[in-house]
Image 1 (cartoon, rainbow, N blue to C red):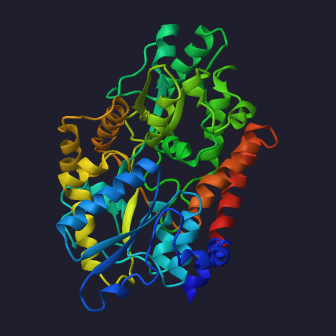
Image 2 (cartoon, rainbow, N blue to C red; image 1 turned 90 degrees about the horizontal axis):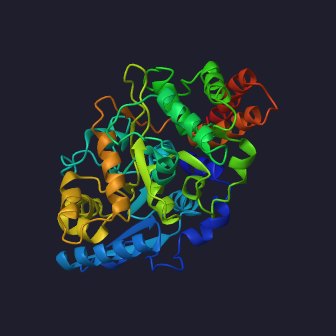
Length: 443
């Protein structure tokens, strides 16, 4: 009961969607009973849910067909939709005892899923030697592996190389080492050399993940930062220094707050339209940004600290979990082994989930006669540079509520300071207070 009450508390929409959560959706034909059809051992049905684009859906369906052809007697029942509403639906299914056998998640959901006892223990159930140890750890909780990464992800800086060339600015290479101050010098050059027609960087201060990178590098903070699995580790002064760093840059260097918030996410990204030289973003957004412009965009990792401190965290893009209530865990594990380790799956899935998780799969794709797109190769190169970082940090799920505290609460409080309603010092104190309130509300 605790888990069901918690999930309903976390997402107010749970009760509203629970009636539909147990059924299908307009994109798939899930089984209501999950495994009743194999009562006579004639066939095993495994429900598999994910979200994504049409390209991802099509590739996944093709992968399922290939697996079924090799494994007669196993049927993978797809349940797929767009991202919006997926989390609410999944939590409602778990609360109703009707979770898919295999479901998609992200690290930030782990504390909720663990509290609800929703995930099967996947420790040593199949060969994960091809997966990075750092990513295996990021798919774990309380010392046990509860999921497997199906894509690599990271944060990087998207740069408009065409604009930089026009302004006579040399951008860092993907394997270069540089600091925040090095980048700030480039941002200032962009504003000055363009005569104010573009900014150096889109204001990154509203994002908790940018604060995390700044803390690890510029502020030389120790792991774990901004939080542990128990609570906050960030301090009020950290927030103040983060806000003040960008305030201290010359006028015209940072895209102002009112312009940043006015950007329509359905329109071209500022870096694609030449309004800014650089944007701090997830590596997974690069292809979309490049598709918005004929300018040449590139992708570089986050800066290091003065002494080489790393900003990088091993954050899986997407994770596949097996439900603790699945009647066929061994079959689920076998499918995920094939899905994340086989060359055949790699050639079918391509990069529809992002950069593939194992070296075997990445090489299979790179060796394919059709090759990979320029955009995919740029993301692969950037993630290779990130994942070769020996000082990479562990990405933690954190306590329940940390996703809200790290993102929404952080953005709201910092926005007040950037817009001038409160001082940076007040913002630091307010963030710690408000974030702890959020975390306390989940206890």
